[in-house]
Length: 498
Image (cartoon, rainbow, N blue to C red; front, side):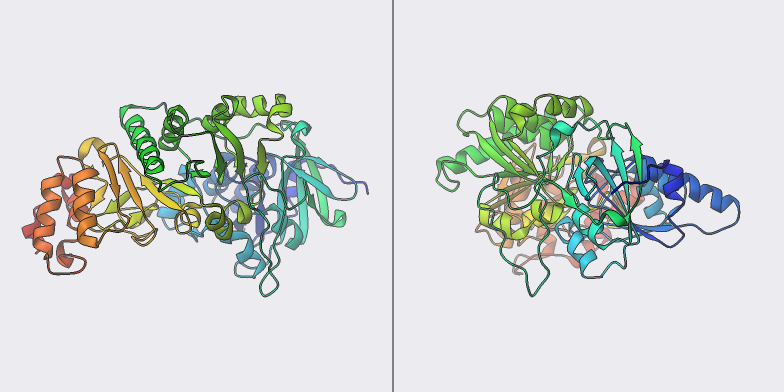
């Protein structure tokens, strides 16, 4: 079959006000860019003409400025799920301009299939190649592409020459059946494959192909600093000791790691620890640090949903596919983040918290309990099902005005029942086999900043030692209230709340 090659503006004109649009990609990796920019421009023109124009946007995870950013600035989004990191989008959400549903990333594709998020009108897919019979070869991420391609009324392909055809073969595309017909996923090691290297679509649904040559919009993270380095070292030392004690197998276990400079510091420390053997990754994103460890032989294999790497790193992968072809696999997000596989493979999960409370509850998403930061992403997909779940964060922020350890988190994303280990630059709190009161003492002694330890101990005295989970309910969010009123949690006076 022959396809229609069109401009981004021509295909964007097919998308109407009220449409639900699904995008390929997972993080900025593999996300369309040209058509979404054209769609933002179309929205601005419609608004200037006094006409309504907003869409519902469904993605695998975050996108880049050309999608979330441009569409938010153009006021083109009515509803959005499941996750984003874009500052322009974040501002619009927190201003109440966009209805946003924060969804576990492993559940996104199936919730679309179940009809929970409405009918998909258009799928926009970034590809490095396409065949006349509808084989679509994705670029740097799996995301929700198989599901939205199958369910959408029409498909737009961005054929992006930036992504080398050398990468064909990295993907393992598999879409599970829905209940009650779903079967087990036959993945028993991170390197196992169960699907195809392409997304098969009905060629008749492809309304146009837009040729582009646009780099991904992945960002480089800040360089390590003494705090992140210490957090990384604390994690590596703890896991090495746990392995020595026999609590982690001597062969080690596959790792999942979130995105950011703390994650990079942790992976760097693990790679440098001589007592930890070469390990595999079964994770949702792979960053530059993992690719470097692969080249050094410290990471044997990487199973992921997205290559969330800088463009220089991505070109290096494409140029060296003879090396990476047998060391990488890219999966759809409902497979990369699948709870069944996380539990079976015995994943060690390492994620970042905004704040944690004295009992191990973790807030990953909200500032002050009300303002969305990014979303839960895939952290809880892994945390709830991990062999060992670790959360990391600096003990303080804003020059010490904010403590990351508080009496009660302002929003709960991962509860105390799912969190095994807390790590800050101050130390490690191993919460396994501990009662709430024991947890509180460990977290204060090992993870809280010294400036906040007296304040937190004083809270416990007011909370009442005879209770199973000590809390002075009127004061539980007192540190947050003090921050809002006085700008510094250290100024908390518990008598104001008791």
